[in-house]
Length: 577
Image 1 (cartoon, one colour):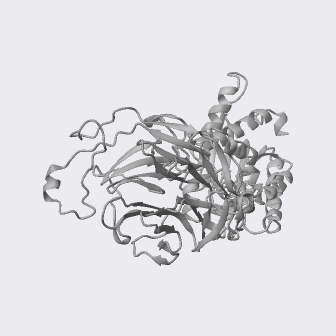
Image 2 (cartoon, helix red, strand yellow):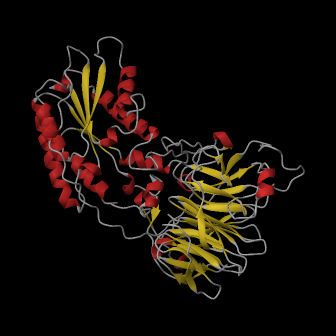
Image 3 (cartoon, one colour):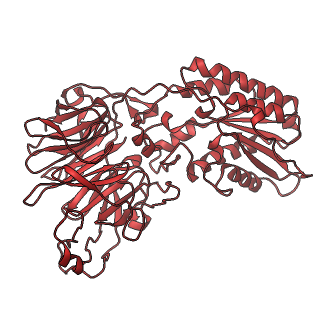
């Protein structure tokens, strides 16, 4: 459901913490997958399992969003049970016990003597000794996501932690230096989430924000998987193939294998992916070697083992590829969400100007009214309005039907009541031949259903009466927001807000009531969104940074609206009676 973290034991077994199925799974070297601990019943259209807390063996045990996993020197499996605030220990027979109590543990890593390093979103970096003593590490991190340890040489271990600001590098877990956020060429190194150390100077990490996997050596960052789009953060999806063509969706956990390949827990695609063929050889900076006195961050390139010496420049021997390894699917736990907050006082209809005049145009004008969901960080060609207009015009015959022109009108911050008042204002102006009213949770108050459904119903009835009296067809559209869906939409923003668990799952019922109350045509986008979320080739609907739609999400909505307009034919006289 949501593979969030990976660990590898000495015999080649891969352990998976599934944060949505509330289960711990193991993939044997022969590819067989089995669940060793965890249970729970699925909710949210089968995209999430209700979490819980219980020690016990196998299916008797319960977890709540297990997000980190590591194998201890004792051969036991240690799990960061995030929303239970505990470190759980799992024996090979599946018996689960509680090892330590923290706050929001999210990632784990061991050093060679058995100290367990924990990235805790609330408490910061923690270290648990083999005897179970917990101590806070004085590392300069804030709300850390990930941790990795390199401890294969004399001296203290290298500890690297990720937080929303980037990476912090520390020797022994004390103090630490924040690594640059720009590469030596001035490009962003990405936003590290989970990471794996390849040596004391080099790491690979997942970047949930840009749906990519990246390699970092010193201040040089290289993309090894995914399609980075720093301007839009919406390059996610699923595609195997060479590095420059592969796509990931909310990649989370990552481990390095002895053959030089990496395994990635591709959370949004519900797959374990392998990245292979990446050539790690690096340039040797001779001047730096002469001047260096081994401070930890003036890192010297270490060539990887191989038949040839390190070249003068970084090279790639063969295309890097990403391939999928099948995993089992089942269910998992939950944290109690905060109650929805009320929408701030919304502008009134008088705040918003009227649509532009028609200037003699005989086109069939459709006003598309809504909040920022209808237009955000886009251009006309990729906007919902542009997609609707283009699709409808292509489907209509060349003669006998007026050209359809869609005019998007964004009523930023407006409630459904203010939007209804706006429609009443424009009803008799002749500025619209048809109206599409797009609603979501940003247009209604929070709280229980009885607090927001009746005002929304009343507002739509007013809008219906105003449009009907003016013989202007009205189409109502409603869509869910990411918090009402599974964990694979808007994942980065959910991780930042500690809101991975789906919330407000009862809101869909309220919107069904609202849409059923109107005599106008209506589009309920919940089924289409859930179908997309369950698709094996799922593409992100929402941006990774906020609750606005990606290009693909706008295409999904635009096609649904265009199909309904083509079914209704509002440009005919019959539809306007």
